[in-house]
Length: 331
Image 1 (cartoon, rainbow, N blue to C red):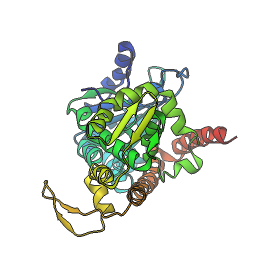
Image 2 (image 1 turned 135 degrees about the vertical axis):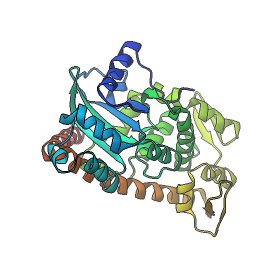
Image 3 (image 1 turned 45 degrees about the vertical axis):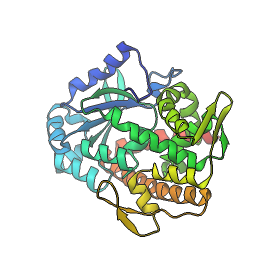
Image 4 (image 1 turned 30 degrees about the horizontal axis):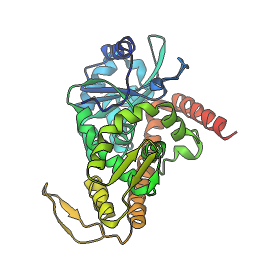
């Protein structure tokens, strides 16, 4: 089942996948960002890759032999692959990015993540970093471990979280915008280094991709009588039983952080704390608080990690580009 939402001409997909031939083998690869916008005419925009690998230390060691210039020179000289992975895991959220990589007349940025960490984030929103990215349209170029199907869980929980926030009546764009905004709750970049209209532009620019991505899971919620969708918009049942159903659909880690009652063993053998709430609004606020705290910590850690890993010049260049776009949106 394809749940990435993004479609791409075969020749374009082949071209983008060609970059993988210059790198050590990976188990998963997707591209994201403005590259996927159907109406994107800026061919100079940076192409963003996420690469999933079994062992980042081994992978970076091999990549340093092939593509030494992709890394900040100080990291290469002081510690090489060991320092790269230590910064990504110890300071960041387990993802190392190499920005401003030139290949085939394109400017690229690629992030490398351990497959175990990628799966944990998809299922549990542990960092809510890669999982947040995969709640938006991406184009999967390589998937040896069936991550696309695994991501179905992530999309279902994203709908549940969005429905908790939304009122009883809403339209389709409201739903996708709320889903899209989840991973930006508390993101420090949104204060000064991101376009204030970022969510709106993402959803409106890729509306049909969001629709094809989420349609199967919206139908699942309709079958449970939690949600009714028509050409005129959506309407959901906001009673407490329906709210409990949505809360139970959230990742276990999120529910445990929301939990205020005594814990018990769940089906998986893990301790599950009971989530007690007296209203839908209370459940929504509790969930948003958990997500916001997770995003604040992850965005701060990744910002520091990215600055350290990219080196002063590249980091400054990347931040300047972000701030320039943000400034345009505010003026």
